[in-house]
Image (cartoon, rainbow, N blue to C red; front, side, top):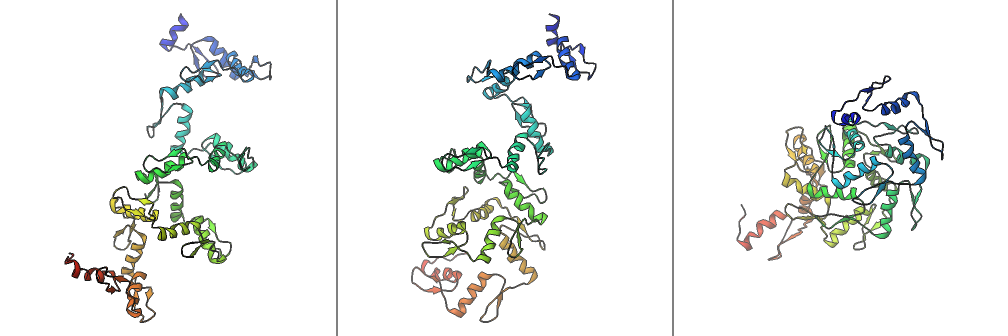
Length: 406
């Protein structure tokens, strides 16, 4: 009874003289002291491993017997020891006892909280002995280690391709089955991996959780942030082997290399135009098909390219990330800023080969040259009269409509 009452009172009268730790029962103190004396009285007859306490030996024996005495009443899953069952039950109860003091996020296991805490502290205690790279989780280190050993134990039965992680094999197998188990609730698009769905959903929500500490600019995906940070550091890790020119992203290097090889292996079947990249061909083909797969959720306007949608959305958010260092005026597009900056510098790089007149932007030169060529591409749908400038056509159409724009 006296021992039991200590559960309620919290009394722990038995103190370890070595480390000061206290216990409510003398037997628990005796077991604990074996940590200091390294006395391991309880030995497994199967493998010879020794333990300080009988309960630890009992748990260990289940490894050999496969016995799982502790069963979850909710789902039937069984465990070798009660502590694992207790942790498992929180999946059903939704109980999250361990809360992060930095951001308030809560977890059902203390180990998960400890791992999460490293996102705030930046701690990476697990270091690779081969290359020195560090990780916040031991499991990440184990996965990384297979890069050095070349171990790829997970093999696809369809094509024989092997992987160093089982999850990578599962994801790969979906290329054979066509399975896309992660559908977007907003637009019917589906994905083979959850991470791709999360990244995609940020197009709908506008969420940009990855923030640049240098300038405050935010991004929806971490790789985009890493690429952006190179504008501050000046890092250009992708170098052309032909001329030594370096680039911040690999795609820019691949595009550049076509200058040396002259290779344009992607041909448009509609007009015969060739491209060095398949992505460029895909964008070009929309000129013929009229496809506009990128839709603005604010106003419904559709675009043929994602970059055009991103620029358009700034009209709704009034986001103007490109600011002139001279006068402070801000713009939604970098090209508009470049054009504006020429008003300060007086630069007019686009010269007419016929008369020498120069212009700040190429589009103005194209319009001007029609004076020399006589080209009039803008035709009135009512009377067929043609004009060199769109603005001239708009002014002309007032004759037919009677409408006078303000």
